Figure 1 (cartoon, rainbow, N blue to C red):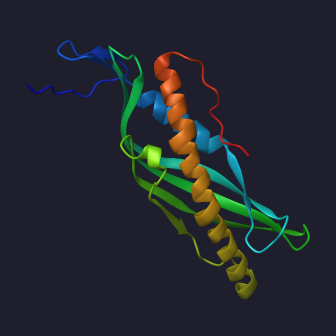
Figure 2 (cartoon, rainbow, N blue to C red; figure 1 turned 180 degrees about the horizontal axis):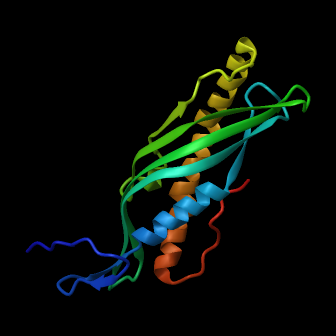
Length: 191
């Protein structure tokens, strides 16, 4: 016997023919992700410079697509997330240079094509980082290329790890807390 789940908005449905309940959390999850990315900043090590950090922030979340629900078995009661998401993020990474006299920033996009409930525990997200390499007017080309490459490296190395942790641990934990009726721990990424 097959069972087809139709698209529904923020309702809890019980599958009468099965042993599980399903709760649609798509709207809540999209709002949580948008708030977390738009209000948070990550401090990342700046490559090649001891005791120097750069700040990775998110300028917006142009796109989150996909559905999110929680399945809870009637026997064990343990909620299990069920989701498949695609997330596009606009980012900016800034560093103070020249002994505090200047600030350099680099902007770009992160594309997370397949964040899903089957693979999140592996914390092996495929995140594509795209940096805007256009040299700003008036910038020293050689110096800008060198520093912007370091910022891009910081985002690709440590920024991707922090985004992966936010999604695979913090977000999924908050999703389970929401489905269980527990209060949220946090919706900000900071640090």
